Image 1 (cartoon, helix red, strand yellow):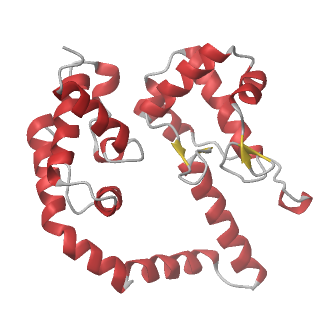
Image 2 (cartoon, rainbow, N blue to C red; image 1 turned 180 degrees about the vertical axis):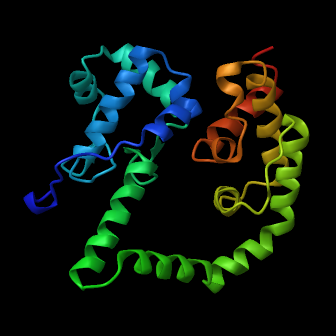
Length: 234
């Protein structure tokens, strides 16, 4: 990152940290490790991504940075990913933080608007309206509306939840999986398997939600469910 993009401080939202069910399920040492990773992603040249010189940070480099042995690093990263604390970039598997990337995008928008003498808040509102009025976006949502409703109805029934099928975040995750050719039966398998696996675990029950179940790890969840159906874990 060039010198002019260096910032004097990293914004830290205490309320988000205190209310995030993933963070709340960590012990004190795990929270410290996660915070160190957040700091590494903030200082990365690709702010929000855990990369070095444009490439994903290797496990060895990360274990050195965090002062962890390889086995402890692997189990800790697996836990963090299962809890939805981070995602992985599809192109190269680089770990990234949705929150940091959002903060950085907003900062860049405000900086660009300010340099042109504009109101950053108005610029942000304009961008949001543009996204929501995108014909392709609307067509995709209308096309999958009934399928999304069936998926969320099944989630609410099996997990005793009250999620809305018109939530923008929910629609985004489900549409992404539909584009990958997953079917209603696939969604049902994941919902039922993860409910059986997590519902009786207080530290995991909070993750029976669309953004976790239908997010980037959906493929691994469906493989777990199919393996379980074959009786490998019986």
